[in-house]
Image (cartoon, rainbow, N blue to C red; front, side):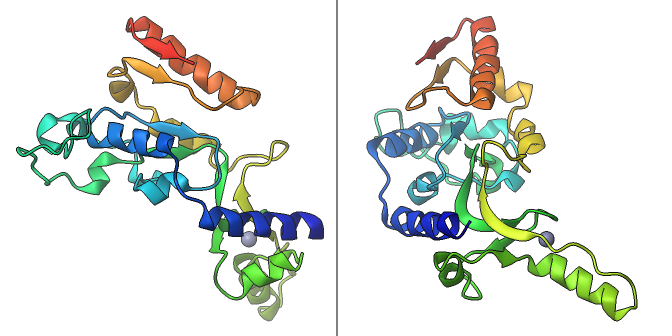
Amino acid sequence: TPVFYSGITKMRHDVKRASPTRTHRFILSLRDAGKLVRDYTQNIDCLEEKVGLSTDLRKGPGSLSRFCRKYQSRDVRGHHRVDYEPRLQETNRGIECVLLHGSLRRLRCSNCFITCCWDECGREAKTLAGQELPCPGCAEISEARTAAGKRATAIGKLRPDIVLYSKQDPWAGSISVTTPLHLFQRLDILLITGTSLATHRVKHLVKDFAKIIHKQAGKAVL
Ligand SMILES: [Zn+2]
C-alpha cells in the first residue's frame, strides 16, 4: 500500500504538468460546433477539463438547445460564427465528458464515499510518503458518537477517486444520467478511439451505443 500511494501521487504530479493533445482539441471543436453529444473517457488525467470540457456529473444530461446553430461559437471547420448568440448557460450543456474510471483530482472515502480535496490539509505530502489517510467525515461521525456515550463506528480510508478494476464503482448508477434516449436519438456517428476495449464494462457500453446507432442507420467508427 505505501508503494501504491507514493506511486499514484507521483503520477498525479506528472498529470498536472501534462498538456492536452490534438485529440482533446478535436473533441472540443466538436463541442463548439454543436456536434458533441457526449465524450466518454477511460483516462484519469482530466486533460479534457484543461481544454474546457465539463466533467461534472451534477450538471446532468444537458438540454437539446445546445445543438442549435445559433448557440455555436464555431462551425465544424473551427471558424468563428458571426451570428453566434452567447446566451447558452453552461449548465444547459450538461456534463460533456464522462470520466468512466474517475480521476486523480480528489480522494474518496472507501466507507462513506464522500470526496476530499487532495491538495488540502497536507494530504498530498502524506500520500507521497506512502501514508493511507483516514476519512475526516467518518472520523467526525465516530467521534460524535463516542462523545455521546455510543460505540465508535468504522472510519474509512481516503483513496484516489479512480475505479480500480476489482473495486465497486460509486459512479456506476450515475452514468445512466448521461444517456437519456432523447439525446441519443440524435446520434449519427460513434467514434471509438485509443481503447483496446479490454475492460468488460467499457466493451458493454460501446456495444450498447453501437446498437442504438445502428438502429438509426448511423455509423460506428473504431
Ligand atoms: Zn468516510
